[in-house]
Amino acid sequence: MVTIGAIIYEPGSSIKNKTGSWRTFRPVLDNEKCVKCENCYIFCPEGCIQEDENGDFKIDYDYCKGCLICMNECPVNAITKVREEK
Amino acid sequence: MCEVKVITGTSAAAEAAKLADVDVVAAYPITPQTTCVEKLAEFVANGELDAEYIKVESEHSAMSACIGAAATGARTFTATSSQGLALMHEMLFIASGMRLPIVMMVANRALSAPINIWNDQQDSISQRDTGWIQIYVEDNQETLDSVIQAYKIAENEDVLLPVMVCLDGFILTHTVEPVTIPKAERVREFLGVYEPKHAYLDPDRPITQGPVGVPDCYMETRKQVEEAMERAKKVIKDVNEEFAEWFKRKYGNGLVEAYNLDNADTVLVAMGSICGTIKYVIDELKKEGKEVGLLRIRTFRPFPKEDVKEFLKDANNIAVLDKNISLGFNKGALGIEMASILKNKKVCNYIVGLGGRDIRIDDIKAIIDHVEKAEDDETLWVGLKE
Image 1: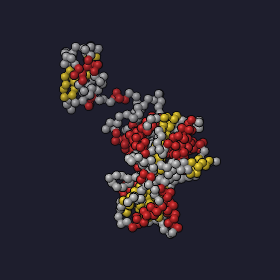
Image 2: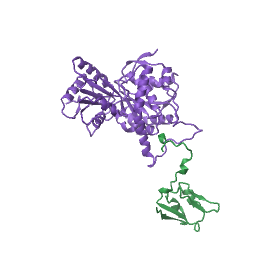
Image 3: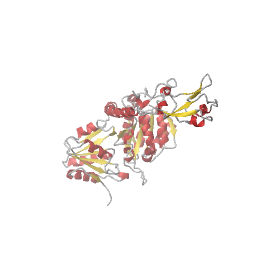
Image 4: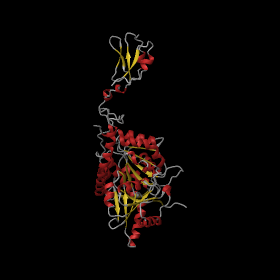
């Protein structure tokens, strides 16, 4: 049900709007090759790459749109692309 | 007691905005609207009207400012004309899509090129599909009354759509007529305080207005506007009746006004100030024993389909006068609507008065003669030079 004027009355509702379904290519990060330079974390335009408590970097596929900027910026080619399958 | 002032159409609109106690006016001057916003600037400057007057650098900004103001819950007014209205075009969709009850006076004027400041109705007709309610008035009194009614219609919870009150440039905007001005307290009582429930700015209630409408929900928002337009027909009629009870003036049934329709086989259909001239011609012909009727369309959007069918069911010769032209179809907007509704009747379309060309009494008589003799639907440009 769309509200009158399409007004959203609930703050923070965009968190529920999972944008990962737009993806054609999925970036896959190999933590064995990763040198923790943080380039992918800095360049991700959606802020969906985060460092976990072990110091490993993780991609949040709920929001990653598959732009592959992280892959292009990775100096050690630790990120590869895989075609999404439905 | 009411006060009677001899004023122009633009002053009447400004007086009405003052009576409605608007909170925000954002406007840019454009001929022939200018005197309306000048008057409002004067009211704000001398303390007669307690409103925020926003000076903007274009009509696009004027409508943007109105949208922002209305989204906070303020009662908002603006006015424009011709190219200015065209410049507002993209913002007009936003106002109606966000369901903001903005009221705007449109001084009808031809569009360029060639540059022309005189009257026809091409400007507002070109905004037909923006989701705005459009009221076309016949005289200065109706301008004042319609701006007041427009707030009551726009702010109704069944409607929540912006309204434009269209009056013919110069013919009404710059000519003076006696206009009865009701008492401010009465008008404020009639309108009530605008208390928006859907859209208002409050730090304790954060909301998102004008968000992205993905394919999953966009169509529903359009359907909601269409349904609101449909409900607006009843609201416009009710407001017209209620206004008559309070101020003793009414305009047909609110959507259309019938004049001498009862025994008329030939009926003219038109909008705006030209209807005054048509009524004069009808009275003249009546003296000669000839019955001709007029159906004045007051609201072009929502279009009063049911009323048109009902009022024109006995008429056989229908002459539709248009002060606009859909280039490439050789019909005016009213002509197109009428042809789509009255499928089994003879509907002739007359393109008149473009760019301020005079529409004389003889022209109207010639139209009546033509439609009575015409064998099929025709479109004719009246008053063209050879």
